[in-house]
Image 1 (cartoon, rainbow, N blue to C red):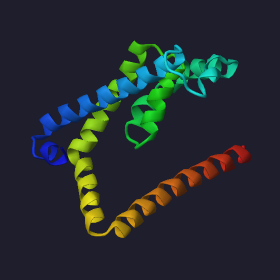
Image 2 (spheres, helix red, strand yellow):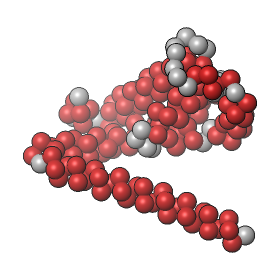
Image 3 (cartoon, one colour):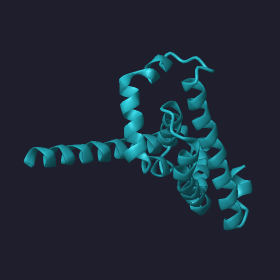
Length: 161
């Protein structure tokens, strides 16, 4: 599929990838809604009716919407955010309005070269799985270090004030 998308003009690749992001995020959101409604059983479903869940819903309703489109610039975190929006009962129309810019960002990023990066990493993995694992591990360490450094700086600022 990667070759098929990469062989298309940017506009077509963008439209296809944005649609993929739309369908995937909507399915994840509705999975969260199904768990919340009790249609699916999950070990953590009982926590959804707690006072803490109500506070989380209120905070997401008031302040959390930017997390939805921004999450589309990450790998993995977007699924957690989309599922959480369904789990805490975000209104569908509000979730969809917040997610739409994320679909566009995701489609743009992957149509502009994100898929080529994954294709290149897949080729490296075929030739040298150890090298591919080292590249992925290095990226993970860099991202985690950046997060830790940012948290450290934020804690330092809070302590200084």
